Image (cartoon, rainbow, N blue to C red):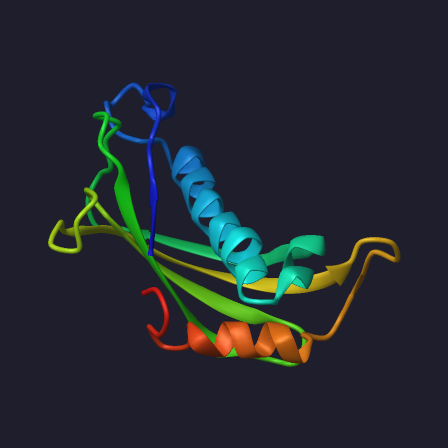
Length: 139
């Protein structure tokens, strides 16, 4: 779980967080998990290069930039040889009891930034991701 904070500039003319800004908030949550949290648990290679291969977003209710943070619960649904799938539940506020406003999923592929080619998930990365499998460590 992490918390993201929408900015006033994220709102559109209808008064809710714009789709592109919602995707940026998902990215902020993902970066916190794959860069900061992974490094703390010995899987720092994830910070050296990943790409989003697929993104799906489902809106259940609008998000608002009202000064409050939004709770983002993440879990790993699937781990392949050279990809993994992250699921997100974005709550409309900072608490687990706040309604889920957005669900999303990203398929993420590790890459070697020098060659630009995909690479396999390392054992350390697999162990880290497995801890988040189906709502594990921080969902």
